[in-house]
Length: 186
Image 1 (cartoon, rainbow, N blue to C red):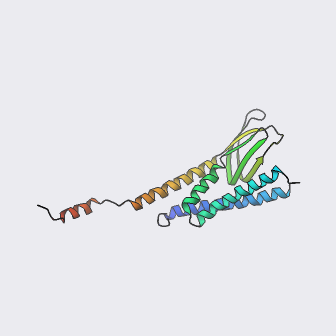
Image 2: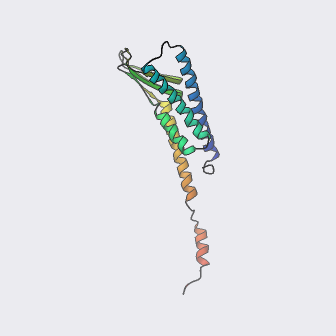
Image 3: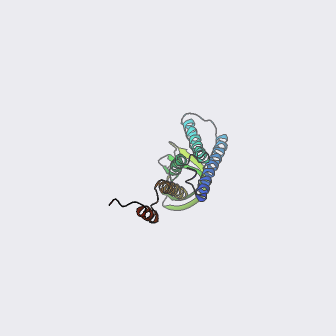
């Protein structure tokens, strides 16, 4: 795989790797800090905490795959990690918001009218089940959409380069030379 990657592509993979690792690490630190501010942790809250730790750990894992040179698997997993960050919502007492790294989110809040907004922020997690608030909010993380596209383009570029390396180049000059040096059977 190393010979397939150009210097520019190697740099892009490395940047993505460290973005994933830093985002996951920041998320875990912020998550642990939030937990220290929480009172009693029991029941479903424990499951939500485990989910949060898993998501941020997954982000770090994606970055580690890339730094270890497991590019194809690392890009695939990184794409999954970014897709998990695209949609954010809060409806009927349930909420889902996951950001590992940074976000740039267009939001529509229908809780009390129609409010449109745009927010930029760092790693964040909000998993809510059966909260008594009547929020109706939908957010789309355009940074996660961009990074998903960015990863897909890297995968395509790698596939194109692999195909070029595997496909023999047909040079008309070489074909002409070999044709003139071939004895005529008649």
